[in-house]
Amino acid sequence: MQFSAFWDQFEASVHSRTDLNDIEKFMCLRSNLKGPALDVISGFSITAKNYLEAVTTLQERFDRANLIIQHHIIQIADIKKVIESPAPGLRR
Image (tube, rainbow, N blue to C red; front, top):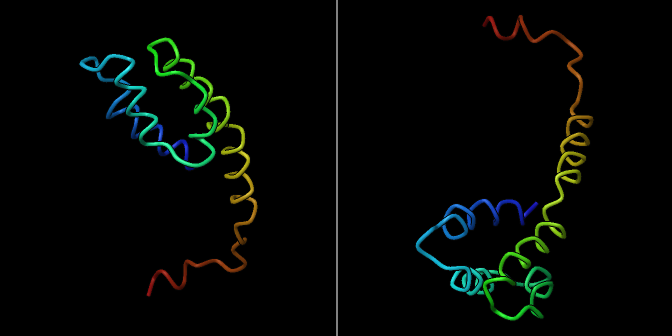
């Protein structure tokens, strides 16, 4: 889930900018990644074509919507049920 938050910020501040070319975007992407995400694209040469391939690779590897949905479903299922009506307490 950390990648989704990173990507939202990166997309808004770098990826969607039209004043940067793909090589500049790729350099910015690499400088902002660390750990496994950086390892995944470390073998890509910094070229315009590889920027889009790196983005696709990262999204396929780390931006897994089904895992996020599953996580939320588990959290919802773990919510404790209300045993008593809270209405009397709310009226006070």
